Image (cartoon, rainbow, N blue to C red):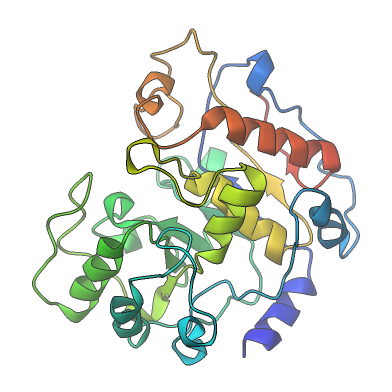
Length: 296
């Protein structure tokens, strides 16, 4: 089933728009110039160029985790979440028994941001929505299409427990989150997928050069935006990005999202290294791996 779906994915020029970060300010160190989106992208172009950026690049890894694979038995994971499943196998096994893993026929657009009220700028179609418990909307239908796949990005073991409790209507998990996730999450289990941590590992180790094992007090993790681009590079032949960039460091109060007031200053206390992410995206543009649709 997976190979069949993968074949469909590679047989089209999939348009993969990632609308995660948005800024109205242009700034030299984080300015990604627009490329002509009319330039053709031959089939397999991304796959041929990706190894220049991603060492040991491979399209063999499944996008979603599957119950039938029992990958931790065949090859036990070396890392804990978010880069592996070490120590979380039991909870994951229960969760995979009630979710699915099939792929859409083509990946057209992905984001983790609202579309209602912003359709003119971000469009109306969302094929995959990456989320984690703290970012989940209690009513997924409000911001998604009926067939949108809701893809859990697991950062910690509690994320599996939260999802299991929600889908099985068990006692809700309330502790272990930096922000209280929804206690009611009205989603169809058939639309839920669990992201393979392999792609978070690739994003961190290959694109950001982050160590997989870090001291607990100084941990750094990729943003879901950069993770989304990593997924696109592994499954699509044409990758367009929009909305990636940051305000000038002097603009500490300028929002970095179009839909909420999170500033660059507030990001300083986060676990994200925005400077490294900007360098990684610039490198993708230089190699022609992605095409940028927006100015900053």
